[in-house]
Image (cartoon, rainbow, N blue to C red; front, side):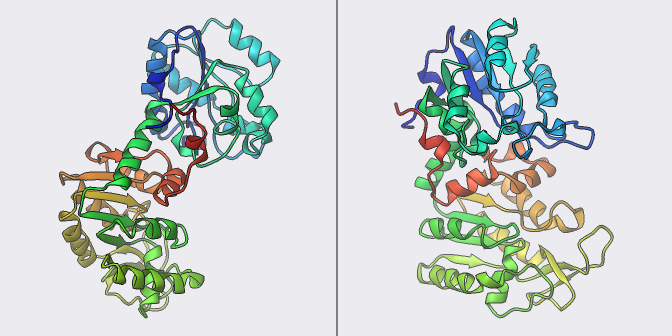
Length: 393
């Protein structure tokens, strides 16, 4: 890796500022319902503490407070969860910049400090230079461990690197190594699974990976635009009319490059997307008034047969509306199948990661990305500003 990493910098006696991704889901009572992202930051946090820094200062955003201090987006629940996971006191401060905060960082006895939500300040998302400089003034060294925000050029990901030596944390380094090395030279055969709602979200991934993939398996809402492009009936299923020509062009291009694209040959359909709705299985054509919500059993069989030959599998996007159990079978069966294969399995973050967690298969995958949008842009071959801005070795 060409960028500085955690082990390349001297941390002893330094004030170390770490950008984490603590954007965790919470219930209506502000209880954290999934602490995966907090746990993912622990190796970096613990390593820094072992190096005896003067202070370890953690920063993050949570939700979309739109540049205002909103109580439900406070990081206080994260501070409490960190105390439990680290078995160490974590001092939560009321803001993330300013003279008062700087004085508190210097005077409080605790080694670990969590600052309040960065996005309470509109300058964070605007990548404001003055705000970036104010953040940099809190520490001697900056560590970015938030892969989930690496695709955003914000003050705490890109702007701050203009003022401090900046290194990748262990989580960011792991993401770069897994995604980067896999995409550069995937072990063949390489099978790509794509799902999710929209074709438009995945066009860049398909075009970038088409020259490298051997087969592409398509499911989820995006599959119905491809089926419609082939002249199939899709009833009231998700359709991006403006992407029909794109879908046709992708199918033609794949054919010319001898890359096999597999589409559903049968579908689970419903009359309405809710619990206890009417559900049935049909073939490739979906009748009017019905909505495609998952791949059917024949498609599952076809997809598993293709995956059985793979040496590398990358999966981005669920194959159905997995949040409802009645429409989760396709994603569940395919996830279970690849979990038993002795191959490289990389799960793009976001909903795909949430599905794998729901099926309790996290430990069976080679790597689960912590960044939905970031992993998608990485798969598209884009440069992520939060990575590009780090100090070169």
